[in-house]
Image (cartoon, rainbow, N blue to C red):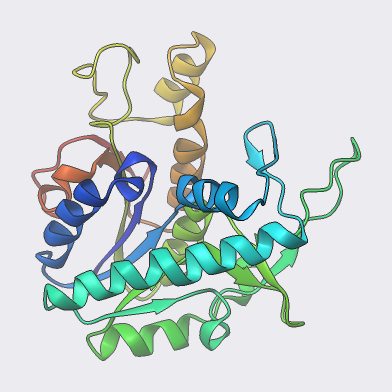
Length: 266
């Protein structure tokens, strides 16, 4: 199988123009097929404040009401996505900016109100069995690099705000039957840290058992848990390898000499 790298970028990297520029230079240097999925939550919050759109959260999750879905569509699908695509084009990487609505690649369903009565609004839960992988392959096989904003759609005309980590995972899974996929989560840490106060305490290899032990001892910071959960979900569904590491190490992490935290097939 041909190699494919599905790479998600977020955190302080996407929010800082210098860090983003440095990352994109390295991303453009990767050999072979790749897909980029990005976030942009802090940028949306900052612009929302200027426009008078208040950001509301429950348990760290954004409530996406009518005003907010318009905001994130503009910021994620427009401002952030097209800036990334333009910079990649300048680096001779033939990128194409997409949302899940484009070519009907990522259908989703609006998240239902929870049993506790919480309504997250226009938030999308991806329908993995409905991903249009053939359409996505057309881009890849024609030497285009898809760049996804964290937006999906419900098939009825409604854009939905969707977690970028989840999009990266389901896209990697969907393409794992066609390509040899490595899913890479890039952020501002060197990997999964055993001691959150020690940047050098990177766990090089993570297994289900070691993960459960680390969680039980409360050694992992909360923000990394969804990434790890998505990683194991991807492995269980056919993705060969998942790596969690620093954005600066992206080129090295597309080789066999990886740095960061690697999660492999069990």
